[in-house]
Amino acid sequence: MYFRRVKSYDFASLTCSNCRASSPPRLTDKLRLYHVDMNPYGHRVLLILEAKKAKYEVYRLDPLHLPEWFRVKNPRLKIPVLEIPTDQGDKFLFESVVICDYLDEKYPRNPLHSRDPYVKAQDRLLIERFNELIKGSLECFDTNFAFGSEQIVQTLDIFEKELAERGTNYFGGNKPGMLDYMIWPWVERLYLLRCINERKFDEKRSKFPNFADWGDQMQLDEVVKKHANSPSEYFEYYQNARTHSMGYYL
Ligand SMILES: N[C@@H](CCC(=O)N[C@@H](CS)C(=O)NCC(=O)O)C(=O)O
Image (cartoon, rainbow, N blue to C red; front, side, top):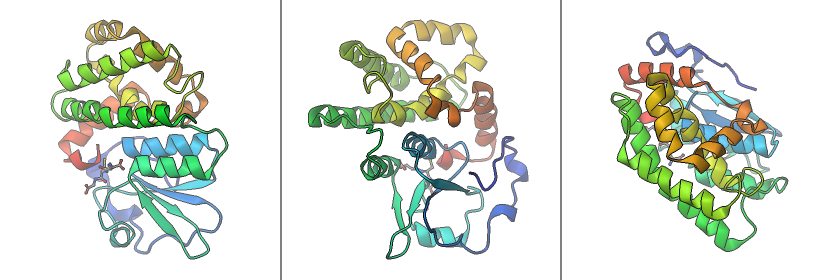
């Protein structure tokens, strides 16, 4: 599915060899995701593409050498971008949550949002609130992997209580839904903290028992497994990314 998959994140040796001078061909029958390997926002979209069993390809961009033609596709230069074939030519969407909502409506199989408009609205609010954990984890990964960022702990507390209130294994009920997949990429990355201090990680984990169980279940989900990386892969990635000014892409 990938044009090229790089497992070892040797940023120093990334060259422009994979920055094609011309843009990829027009699409015919499948979607195309412009993605930077290991980027959590693109990870969101990969999960939804997979959950929907959509036909897609991934165009991997080298974040240190974005090709000129990409600026035309997305003047904001943000990734992820979804390219959609239409009779009027290819169209583009950006903003991971917007892309994922589009996919949920476009592919009715396996609906990921609740049919109840109130629950759907609540889930959207929780996706917004999760931005605090995103900020906290960026700070944590971008500095010294310090534990106990208040933003992380406070957000986990909100989600812990929400799971207890819903009384279900997943936020989506008896299977993962949109909210589960929208927050998962950052939770999968939080496990890297176990590589730094196992005891502290397990102590924190025990403070959020519902959320911890949710995380264990999510790791067994087939969609999640398809795009999962191990804690040590993330640890190595973030260590290297820090020394290569990758801040914008974390
Ligand atoms: N809210 C956007 C965030 C996307 C985003 O911030 N992308 C970053 C990578 S994490 C990016 O492309 N940064 C490049 C830049 O800002 O120049 C989404 O959900 O898609």
